[in-house]
Image (spheres, rainbow, N blue to C red):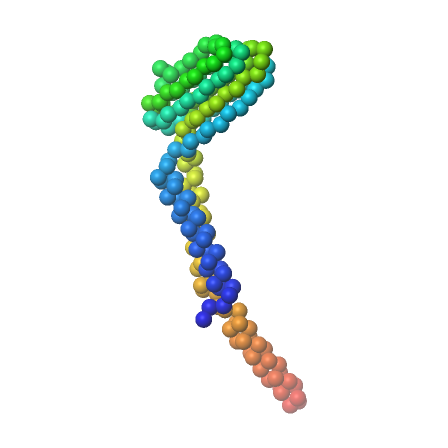
Length: 176
């Protein structure tokens, strides 16, 4: 029969192991990460967006404001833009080659501008390694919980040995 601490250790280890496995399966099924957000910037502000776009990934963003300059630099030169815009500008493209994409937006108008974007990013290659480390931690916890002797048995074994050692030591000293 396992004691409570061993059972708790096994359960915690299995939960950690399952979290690592789920994370690994997710990273294998969806190697790209979708980032979607919006932001507002004041008069004269500059925003620079820099990310790694994987091959065949869809990118889109919209800028709304009085007037602004936009510069887009992509690995595929056909998607590059360097121009001034008024009121609203929308861009969308599919990156045919993987690489770094840089988007710079400079507010040149008299009011703030708002940008909304949805980018498909290359996931960090170390993310897979993190999943493996979590799985290993779960296995170690389960192994430690299973292989550790129950506390009650350990104490029952140690106590009689200590008591018998005291009795024998007192017999030795009494015989002199």
